[in-house]
Structures are given as structure tokens and as C-alpha cells.
Image (tube, rainbow, N blue to C red):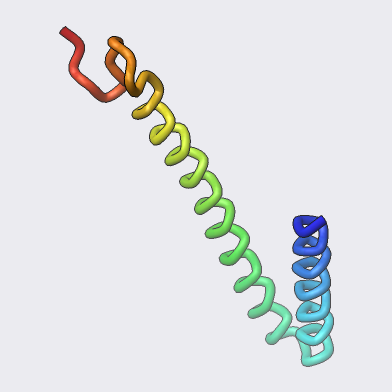
Length: 76
């Protein structure tokens, strides 16, 4: 439920800010679009890095406590 509320709130805020920027003219609307694209690109990059970090972190502790070595440990 909280994820749905967060998505609805974010969509509402972006729609409202786009509407307000469009009322002010073409230059503020263009600036809004540039800022929106930068924000979306950085959020997608952060999500991708978070997934890669979780994969690496889980690989470190894959065999924690067993006789086998983990991904980043030296094998004999």
C-alpha cells in the first residue's frame, strides 16, 4: 500500500509541476524538462548501482561459515 501511495504522490507532483511550468511559458517548460530528464537519469543510475552492489554484497557472503571460499576470497 505504501509503495502505491508513493507512486501516486510522485506522479501527482510531477504532473502538477509540469502544469505550473507550462503556464509560465516555453522557457520555464524547457527548463523543467531538462531538470526532469536529469533527475530521471540519475535515479535510474542509482537504482542500477544499488542492484549491482546488492549482488556483489550477497556474493561476498554466499558461503559464509562453510568450508568453501566466497567469490572474492583466494582459492587454494
